[in-house]
Image (cartoon, rainbow, N blue to C red; front, side):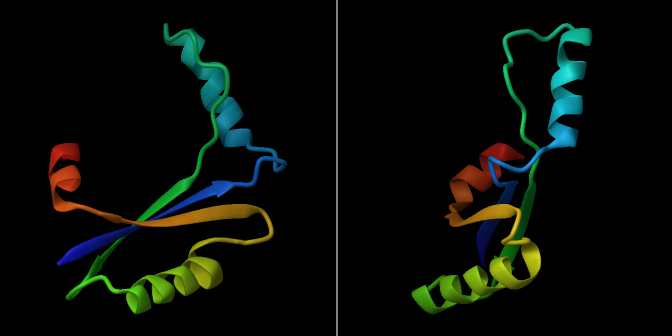
Length: 89
């Protein structure tokens, strides 16, 4: 089983009030050195079988039509290898 990840972020010209709220809270919690925060979404799709070009094209279509709003968000699609996935847990 493979994992395909879709990361969705607001376009740079779009205001990000959630990111600004996090940016304002960090110094109050004792964290310094952060100059900007943008908050997005991450979708992890478990795929049966091999991840082929056709599967990636299908995920791209999912990202464009359902997982993101192309007017205000950018997205990226990548395959997550099992070593990275296990290390993150």
